[in-house]
Structure formats: structure tokens, C-alpha cells
Length: 161
Ligand SMILES: [Mg+2]
Image (tube, rainbow, N blue to C red; front, side, top):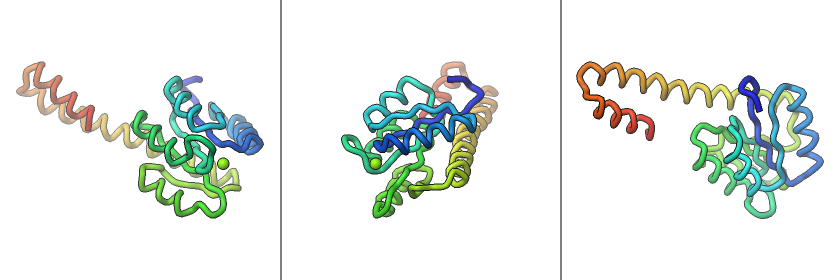
């Protein structure tokens, strides 16, 4: 994985779909890690700096909803897009309430997918920047009167928030 490309994790139990979508995105300059189980996705995200995860909703073992929960709990800045088949739109909508960036109905067009990925990545970068700006402002304020210890404590608070 390099720093110049967007790191994408794709998890789907349909091997053919997984392979074709991975290829399409690799040629469009994404670093792709493709796995076929939620368990593997959670493991892969612990070992690699993932920007966005594309998560199939219906999978044997840990399903998309559980995978989403685990990924968001462990990786604050990761954006998750849910892939959903027919008849599971309601669950997909539920997932967005649990922190998924959005959902896409399968089969989705590559244009639609690229648009979603672009927007999700933009959101990730903006959120990170917002926190960085907030930290900087707080630092400037407290550095005028705070002791190093107070500054550290304040930073820790901001970091958690
Ligand atoms: Mg599936």
C-alpha cells in the first residue's frame, strides 16, 4: 500500500462480484484489499490503513451490519459504504443510522460507485481536518496561559472527542 492512493477494503461473499469490482477499481488507481468474509475484513483493517470499506450486507458469519459496527468502533476515520441486494434496503438504511456513509444497491454502475467513493473519501478528509483545526485553535488559546501539563491534558481531551 502507498500513501498516494486511496486504500479500499472490499468485503463480499460473492466471489465473482468481488473479483470484478476489485479489478475495476484497481485500474482506477485504488489500492484494493478484497476479502469474502466479515471476519477477514475486520482483521485486514487492523493490519492496513484503510480509508474506505465497501461492505456487503448479506454474508455468512459476521454480516455487513456487524462488520460495519466493528470497523467503525476500531477505526474512527474510516468511511463505510454498504452494498445491498434486493429486499434489504431497509437494513441498509439502518446501517447509515449506525454510521455507514451511504449504501449502494447491487448491481450498481461503476460511475455511481466512483461518485460514492469520492464523496466518502472527501468526508473522511474533511472530518480529519476539522479536528486538526479545532486542536490547533485550542492549542493556540491554552498555550498563552497553560502549563505544559494542562496543554497535554487538553490535547488528550480533544483527541478523544
Ligand atoms: Mg452477499
